[in-house]
Image (cartoon, rainbow, N blue to C red; front, side, top):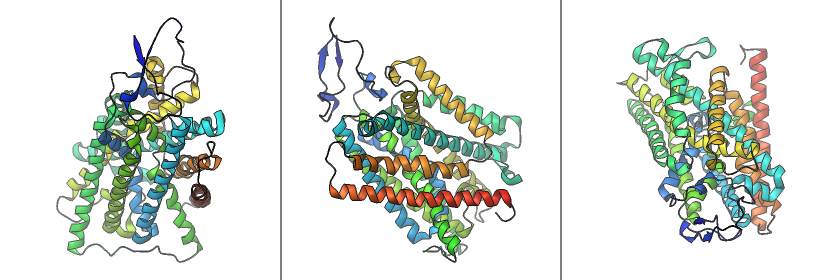
Length: 469
């Protein structure tokens, strides 16, 4: 009887699953592994490795989520010129931070983000990283489910009822109410997709999710072009409208949105672990970032061109009125439904690292999660239940989402990778790497501190004087 080892040696890179070696199991072979393997993918010995295309789709789906619908609003704050430049800048910064993470992952022989943090900062560093992943991903999933409920069943924010797609099609009934729709969506769509033990198993749904994001983009672009030809759109601003000190502070409110839009670090190594050739993960990252940046730029451009200074924080809310073109109602429904379905398919990709990191926090010495069906099931049901309750009982998560993006997300995306490089436990960081790491930390802390202050001040004004807010 033979089994495949995880890798030939701790510091030797695994280039292909074909390079794995076999060892004989006999009476002296230890039954317990000395260290828990955090990636659940290795227990499937009949798995020959994920393809490059599947990896790109899974990573792209990790990147594209709720952030895409908030990006047109960033154009309203920054203007098209500065807005597009910042999107490209954050994408380049993300590539650098992921590159540092992958380099130190290879040097330490770690198979997870937590493993790299543990190598640099010990168990405390690993634990802090896992807590941030749990906070960030639960917040993101709650937002996803709230949006799905708003799209399908409508919302009554600020006392104004916005009809959902199902209500518009069939009228108001008990079976298309928010609670029942979310229950059925959770049981029939989200839970089955969350039961896969390999992230590569989601490659087809991830491909469909990217396609639906493109549908959202193409419909928005088509509407904007038609209205531009009709002369009913205004020329969008190229630069931000700065009139006083308050307008300068408001520029920083877009930072959490941009940071959250590109955070994918918690899934990079899970995807790399399942690649048939792990050395291709850098190409996967570059391809995914390029694809997502193009989608982000085009969505921001056409969304801002279409609605101008009337662009709302959630651009989906702009598709609740008559657009002034033929088939306006049908196009509105197509935009909202494509995005809701997109989020349903993104949901399990974000849940995958959340479950692994929560398992690492609660059961650090247990067998791999994929080998324990009971633990896997309990964690999956528990997390989905928490997200479901949050989506039903939290009245508004947008302010909380801003704080999540300015804290846990910025730590995962920029501060932790930079800290790993500055720690330089293996003595390989160049002077350039350390300078860029310091720049990344200073920029992230400064920009997000102002963003948190600005959001807190806005909430304070809204609470003390709702009419002024």
